[in-house]
Amino acid sequence: MEEIFIRRSIRKFTNQAVEPEKIDKLLRAAMQAPSAANQQAWEFIVVQDKARLEQMAETSPYAKHLADSAVTFVLLADESKMKVPTGWEQDMGAAAENLLLEAVHLGLGGVWLGVATADFVTENVRSLFALPENIRPFAMISVGYPDGQKNQFVDRYQAERVHYEKW
Image (cartoon, rainbow, N blue to C red; front, side, top):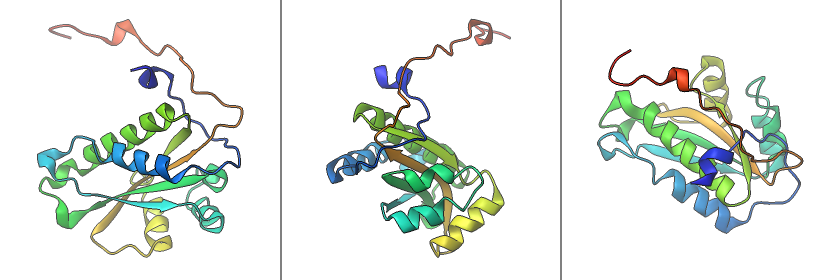
């Protein structure tokens, strides 16, 4: 699957809107991810409003690119749906990667901004969206048509990090 090899973090986007059918495909790809005990505790907020995207860009020092995205997905997990509470981050990581790979497949670019990795960002997102207590913010993924940056192959394989049968 070429998308795995050419995907790159794209932070610069044109002003072109992402078509509703592509947004639907991105969400469907995210929800096809594997999930611990098939809990599928994920929830998504889709944001296209420029004023809202600008607010989101203020939630983290690394979120400035969100303001210029065509659409940003907020990935969340619902604690009330968790059968395996220790597996939610793996589930959400798989959903995020599926979304990013589908973006490449659709000719789009995107970048993953961790939210669950920093308490202050988690609280900023929780506050901005008035999230209920049972909803855990995980990440924000900005998506759009790349402006200057490209999804292209960069070889990251390192044979010295592969161990067979023993260390």
